[in-house]
Image 1 (tube, rainbow, N blue to C red):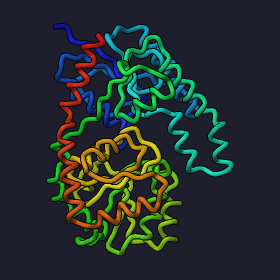
Image 2 (image 1 turned 30 degrees about the vertical axis):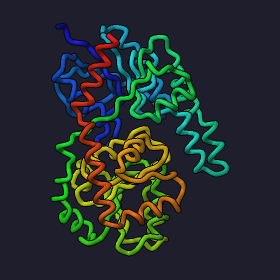
Image 3 (image 1 turned 180 degrees about the vertical axis):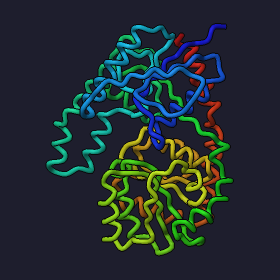
Image 4 (image 1 turned 135 degrees about the vertical axis):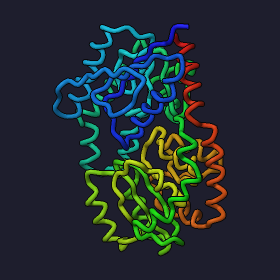
Length: 374
């Protein structure tokens, strides 16, 4: 049987990027199936078993960056023949679009809740956001579009709300996780990581993993930490260009020593092993891989109502959900998981859900979709 030829489009690879890790996992998981893969990208580090097609036109600024890449990719694909083109970027020359970034209109709506005065109207008039909304509209209105892969029920409902696409065009395929790599056995790293950052063995350690602290709720998290008892610690893994502002706030709140910035890490697994709870009060996140990784590692999760993975957390009893800007509700959730017995029970429930969402399950769902579309 002739293999299905698929071009996957993703502009670039960042080692700590959730979307890039998803593409890596797709390439790895589908490589052994009856699928012939090509990756169309600006740059890529690592990976094998697939062709890499580089499209890297010159640009200045993010608007030109996105526009020029989309234009170059569509031009390149015209000269090639694939059964399906699946894009992880907003471009209209694809058959399948994976809405891994959710709906930009909804992200702007949620972000506006946290902005004040001049910053709010500057966002509304920002040329880049206007471009992204235009590009998004072109994708969802494209006559070529056969399916939009939604990584959560939340994203599917948002697409239907803004663009009115029918159910049959919006399959939900959750991200997959390596349930052997991310496993409760990671607790073997507990002492090693805690010793490195001077975190007492008996402390209750909350873990935040993510880059882009404003969007993912670090400011709110710091305010809540100021209300927590002395044995509660927070370890922040990730990067942000304004990290000094957050570090300064930690000092102002008297949290030095109890809130630790670990920076971006090439391997986050030991940090899951060292922690007791993952907390991610994100303003908007379609389906963050870190939630699934933490659940697979046996950690309970506290996240927000606008996190796509909240549907798994809530339905499984594997954690707690609250509004991203509700400091009181987040504080109560974190206080409740200081109780060891409760957090341990939620961690076991979280692991049980993650076991059903392994890489093989994701690959099977994708292969079935591709076969149906071809």
